[in-house]
Image 1: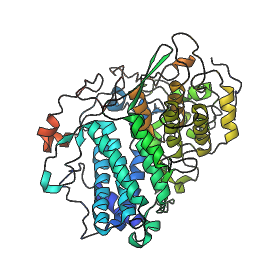
Image 2: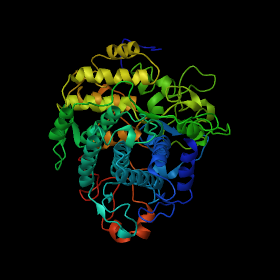
Image 3: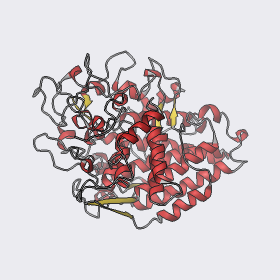
Image 4: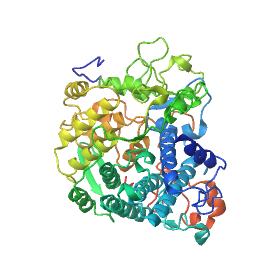
Length: 541
């Protein structure tokens, strides 16, 4: 048991139109979707807020399976096994909503880019370029090679070719550069050519400085994904993918001078959430607009790895008060209880229903149904910066940068800087919290990157789980192992489950039906031991 000093740290109509339209069909045809918005029916001014609202919705609701895989959530013992998620044995259509929703969303941003450009509305165009780049970053990080340069061209490219994932990342960096140029142009960013931008930009109300910070943060995220780490006993080995000059790209961001999203500068929206039009995370995991218990929150409960069965999970092992912000205690209980991922229903009568900790903590929805919906948080941004400082990509002191990121995690969840400082001090010498910690033994990792990646795991629970999965894939980290906690995240114990978490997803079946030659050229996919041919390009482990 880890010995520490701290033990008990104590617009909505338009949006609805687009979202409803997207749900009419199970598949999104990249180039021939009959539900596409057109300039004859709506314009870029009204499409932007709807697209932003949709981004917030899919950000909040798309990643339940990763919450399970990364050791945060697990299925309640009240329900039968979710075979596909818990066995990692799934078909092409497993999580196809990611493909459909993010291409749909990117298509709407593409519409804004094209039509705003034609009108000289530079701020609208820049915002849409940034948001479209974010959508494609997600798609690449899930699928690798995908249709990109030939996407959204209608009948010109009925069966779009797949673009190499590395080349997409390269172009995303340039798209973000273009967005920054537009935002800095006094004529193109003028409110006179960007009608109603303060109202229709639900994220930053047309604040160009914050949008440049957002673009720089997304550029940094792409570069951090191109940075890999291996832990060989207590030796840390860092490297970078070939094809992108990570150091030069980072230097260009620094030279630009605006900086990154910092404390209190999350990308978030609130177009008027209420009990009848709730925040999307609240609606998915707490209560729907009719007041019914959300099925997502009823099925998913706390994972034993995170909270234990008697308040003895990884959060409590570090004396981490964030546990009470991510999870809600079982009814009438004073201690958290989680369930093992993949446990057969009915095995333990204590691992059912309201006897388990719930996953909709007050740190995530502090104002209930009216809480702002996040897209990219200041917390994630500051952890990206901490790693960049540690790697020497941007200036600063790595211990200070990491400490600031941890403090932002605490305050974002409704805790205080003082509580964060007590947590850091109380865990001095342990490499999951202390960046300067020595290895506990010759076979365990010291601080450094191990600390940064571990703290991202603690901080991004429910907030950015795709980023945590990406960290897991671009490193060979075993969470908890360096401080004598059970290594994780734990793989499913369901009979027949692979001993490895998948490294990517299959392409959806619709691609094999309608774009067979191009998707077929990607070869047979191996989700567990990916070859150089079909792994995500930054996955060097």
